Image (cartoon, rainbow, N blue to C red; front, side, top):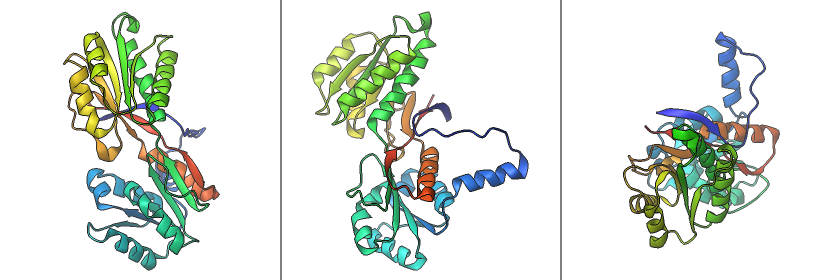
Length: 288
C-alpha cells in the first residue's frame, strides 16, 4: 500500500541537515518518544482494527496496556493505579472515560484523539481532533492532482464530491476551494445532504459523466452512495478513520488519519504543557 505525500495541518519543520547512521536513529527515537511517566491505554476494538496502533502508542508513551473486552473501564483504572503515570494516552473509544478520570485523578494529564471533542475541556486534557473539513480539503487537492494527470490536463473531466452529515456544508466548501486552487480554477460538482442520504442527489450524479469523486459520509452510507451514484467507470476516494475502513474494493484510495504525524504534534503539546484541542493530520492512502 503506497502512501502519497499529501497532508494537512499540523505541519512539521524538516531538519536543515540530513543525519546518518546511529545519530539519525537516536534523533528519530527522541522525536517519537513522549515525556517520561506516560502510559498508553488501548481498547480491544481499536487494537484489533488498527494493528499498528499498539506499536505507535507504545513508542510515544513508553508503556502500553491493551484492555480486555470485559470490564475494560475497571481494568483501565487498575492499570493506572499500578503504573502511577503522570500522563495517559487514550485510544479513541476510551475518550468517554475522560470525565471520570478527571474526577478521580485531577492531577493526571490526559491525551486523546478522535473525530469529535471529548466531553470536557478541562485544562489537563490534550486532544487531537480529526475534522471532516480538513479531510475534504486534502481530498480536493488529491483529486485535482489526479484529474490533471488525465487527458487534456483535466479540462473536461467532471469531478464530484458527496457530503453528508452535520459538517457537510463546511466540508463541501473546503473541498471545492482546495480543488479549484489546485486545478487552475476548475469547479467540482457538489452534492450536500446533511440528513445523510438523498435518492434525488444520487440520481443526478448518475446522469452526469462523472470521472472522479470523493465521498464523505458515514461508514453505513458510503456503500449506498457509491453504488447508487456511480457506474463502474467512476474512480472515487472515501473518507474513513483507520478503524472504519469501508469494504469498498472499487475505491482507489482513502483519506484517513495520519496517526504518526498527529502523535508527534500531541507529544510536543504535552512537553510544552499546552493543553487544549488542535487539528489532527490526514493522509491519502492509495489502494490501487
